[in-house]
Image (tube, rainbow, N blue to C red):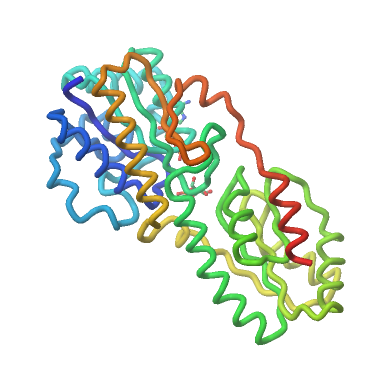
Length: 321
Ligand code: ADP
Ligand code: F6P
């Protein structure tokens, strides 16, 4: 395979630039031609492709966001949109497409590949860590570290005032950001969208914590569970405890990628390009399992449901005793 394109799609994630760089450099080092597609599937449909070389990705490894820009493109979800995308790739003579994105982006890639025979490689890029086939996605580690940094600061002020705080983190369907930041930050409670929670249990635990001498109480709440303001209101009504709220929002999506995310990006990019270089004939996604880079057919990967790690949640409860 000689000519490939790369795009980023869906929510941006730290490490996407490191992945673009990896794709461009690994491909150029093998004499392949690389095109960068602007703004995900929107740019693909509109023919926004630019030739890239090793120097196009200089000084990008440490940058958050995505130099190719990203978009959510409803048109790509239609027969017409997919055909436009395939026509553009064929017009450029592109033999393979690397898609860096999450579940939605991978569904688009699967359709493009099944309906128009375009060979694609998916690199998992989303802070949510919501793909079932891989242990980790690009951006997750950085996002959790950003949450931890905020949590440490919030803990300082909450402790000084004997207050509780509900910290709302990202994750509409997947509680991994809440789970990992909650464990690493020593949260007293972790609420995730995958499991129901009992507000009375939380309130009882908070009251017991005060008796036990805990002077601040941090509740990490994934956005998919509900609003931090609603949870605060319930706790105040039921306990009278002073509670503050912080919604961390988009700071979780930005920032310089961690070592973990940069190395994962490099390893995934190298595998994706190697598969294309060696003449892959089916579309696959790249991931990491037990610290080994894996790849599997896109259809198979999308069938694997992401689940929350209940053992880790139970452990978190013991650790907050
Ligand atoms: P993420 O990739 O981060 O999960 P989204 O769910 O927003 O982000 O999806 C990104 C884009 O992928 C969508 O705007 C759309 O262009 C495309 N997409 C999502 N689902 C499909 C689908 N089933 N078929 C074709 N394209 C899709
Ligand atoms: O998928 C990543 C994510 O950051 C989610 O955690 C969040 O719910 C969503 O994207 C926010 O999307 P938008 O950019 O449309 O506000």
